[in-house]
Image (cartoon, rainbow, N blue to C red; front, side, top):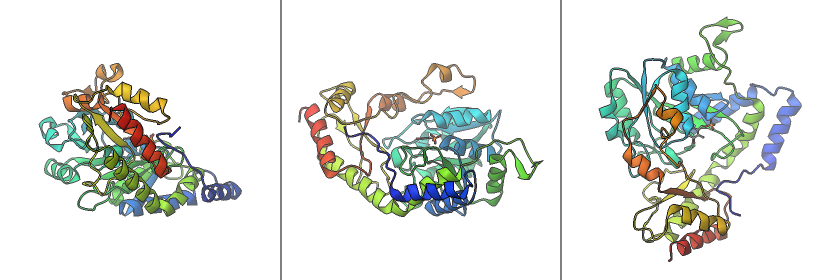
Length: 366
Ligand SMILES: *Cc1c(COP(=O)(O)O)cnc(C)c1O
């Protein structure tokens, strides 16, 4: 079986975790500080605030701007539920633009949604490819909006202009077990502004600035040194990780080129993509339905995923939610019904990539 993701724990990670256990300081401590330094380096920001999940990162970023009841946050309709849940947890209302050919928020669909209540724009760098941050920044500047990036899938991704994901607004990264960099459960917000940074550090720790001196009602969103110790050694191998994912994506693109009814992502045109997922789309011209391809993959030992099976709001609990405002995202709904992601991770062997290509080609009758 070639799984869609593979979690690998090497000796360096084991040694780092053991050293934390031996130190007896297993909650937030010096390893979290080191993790934060690595993360601010990653995004090229002045600072980073570690938290215990990507969802917590989104919540903390939104809360640091004071976003809450009565406010509206505009995001992408094609994302993981965490993006939407974080908005709802602040008490704000969520609204959705539509997506472009790159699966990311089409900034042209944002402007019609702007109202007096709009406080933040929350683009998602889906699959590891960056959203149109030049336009996002422009919209936020013109309309005085907070900019929060869901970079959960985009560690070390860069835009076409060469700027790092997570450096445009507050950058929210996840280190969940299956992300490109991981520690089981973890997250971080990358930040330039010292006031926002301080607010996030306070909110992360019960709203407490000095011991038992509370500035605001807060949370416990702290990361542990044990988790930070799992993540830290992986920063030493980022270049190899990215090179492997990019090589696999290029090989998949070449191997799957020209099949009728199959659209591959344009790897060559997006050098800054970090390939958290390699997602293809089947169009009307495809000889088989997506489910038949999925069956064929499973039969021949190739893992796959539907990211995501529906638009994020397209569930009863959101459709009936008083603070989920659906304006219609037909492109996201159509794309969600036609995408399928193939293994692209950095632990794949070349022979496994060839096998994936063979299975897809024969399923499509090529
Ligand atoms: C994984 C993910 C999150 C949430 O991260 P957790 O660490 O699982 O809380 C948020 N947004 C996107 C797009 C993700 O892929």
